[in-house]
Figure 1 (cartoon, rainbow, N blue to C red):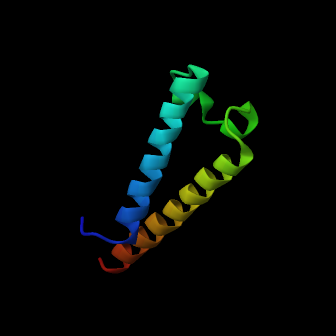
Figure 2 (spheres, rainbow, N blue to C red):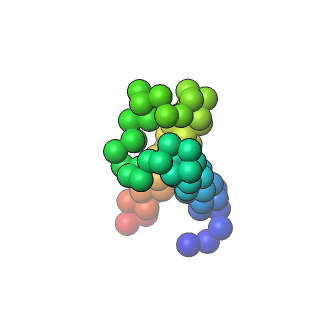
Figure 3 (tube, rainbow, N blue to C red):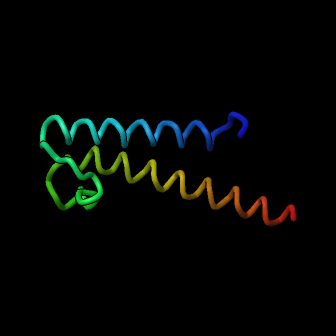
Length: 75
């Protein structure tokens, strides 16, 4: 995969999720991130962190959808 916005944003999103996972492990002793992916309502992270993750996720979804649409059009 060549460098581009999709690769860069995917990498940045992965880093955010990893930092969140480390934070949960170190401060909340949360070992299973999957159980806590309803983070907004769990109170484990603040609303500003949740909105940041949610925004990044939405951006990635839009980029992936556009990429798939472009690839399908080229077939």
